Image (cartoon, rainbow, N blue to C red; front, side, top):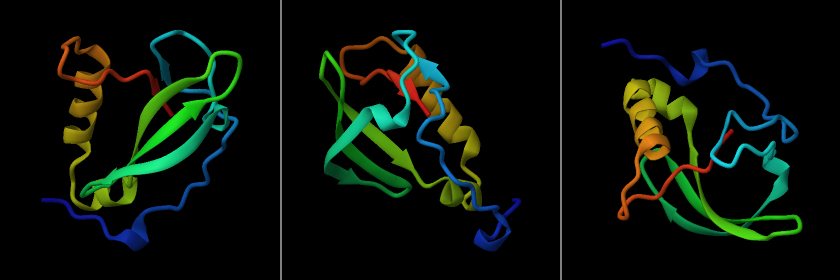
Length: 102
């Protein structure tokens, strides 16, 4: 099993103006278009926040923030990609759908 140390992972800066990588609605939202309202929960690899999209039509979403360094160290990239694919492609009443990916 390949392990990566925290020190070997390059630190990246996040650009709030970078457009989304995926949008179910096809709009060009950026992370700065959302306001974090509160923390909903914490998991092993990140946190879930209640967020609101600003603009004419205010919409409420849950945002899952994943600690990418930890995913890489634990060698769980494929599992993370699978979860992302299921939430983007899946259509089931008991699953949340992915609306945006940044």
